[in-house]
Image 1: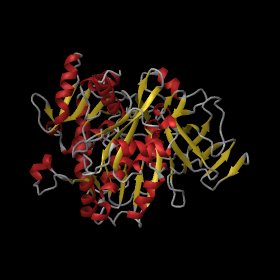
Image 2: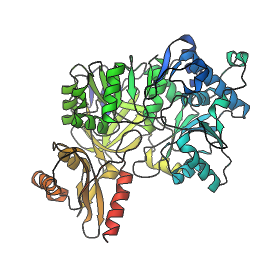
Image 3: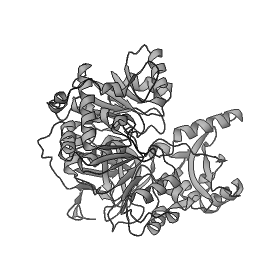
Image 4: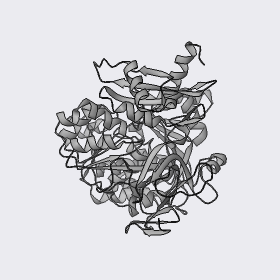
Length: 555
């Protein structure tokens, strides 16, 4: 191929580096909170969010149990929460946590933390005590706003470590300050005269997020004010006009960015805390949802259950897909169910503060699209580190003006991930074609070996997923003394299916080379473990694997 090739007006390829168009940040804003408050103040009557699970009639006096909020009400609650934080001495660079699923009032501390110049950190509301202790120690958070289900875990973890973190609860809990009290005691003039904190350096940390943690405890990822502002201002509305639906909480970068983007672009946020296949389609039908952000796992489960055909989902014009590999076959099936919608695969990660590639309508099914503005990517040989040309698989490396500067208090992990030339090693195996379209093949750390032969679990998963009686599948490795590892498949069957382990093992043996055969067996599950954002939790599956093989005497 040519050394310097102009693909289109959006990106170029030079020396096997794919580079998106440069778009500089131009704004008077330095504080994200100020941008959010200005947007809410400009359209006070706009309904900013609806709790679609508990929606019912209410009176103004029952505000805490409200199921809709206008921007005026969201502005009021955000500022009152910010005033309360200041009264507690929270200032620039202090860390404040939010630990809750998608519930009505969690936006207030989320926005307020930015307003006072503190560092926002979200904790997984499904965490156990071990994880809670980890988040507390890593972040050094002074205050945490938590839902009722998380409070006891946080209090027990704090007690074990003699941590005097202040806990505020959304709702009620014994001996814990309710969020409703945070909103009291602030005069109208205090709210009207509130000013956000001055941010002297927009490259300072605005948020401490966490890597996906699907295989172990997550690392703390620092995201700057600059990165958020680029996302909200340079990238504009990202085609998100209308009525959106997504499941990610603030613990995930997708939940953080979508909440911010929808607020500044006047999109009505539908609060839906936990995914369920049929309920999702009922919501789309009832609220005439125009676009959704879903994981491949969620989409495949809806497709297999047939709910896209059962309900009227014709209002959907865009489906954004991310978080895991979405096969060409699944994308084509989805497109057939939603002929009037654009299905847009994207690639991103927490460390990148968003996406670096996105599909366009003319792109091939199964690709994650081409490089976006202000980003670069290349594929390197796993042995030599040299940049590779089209149709050659290797590790995906990327650069972006929005990417993290490193992991929080973890210089070694930063050094292991971001090299001396500023390239972030994603840990994903990928290739691009002659048109610059990127294809993700697997996670480098999730590949396994059988007698020295490299095995890609996603290839086995894709084959098994093609069986009509398989709803969901995940393949992990079982340690073996002589053979390195044996692949084991965890499978969710279609309800009532009679498909057997032998039938599925035969499918693999007939279609794949010997090293890929399921020597670790197949385990049928009633329910697949997922992270709150919808990804399959391989960490939990490996714990199931270890337990099963330990009692059988294999580990």
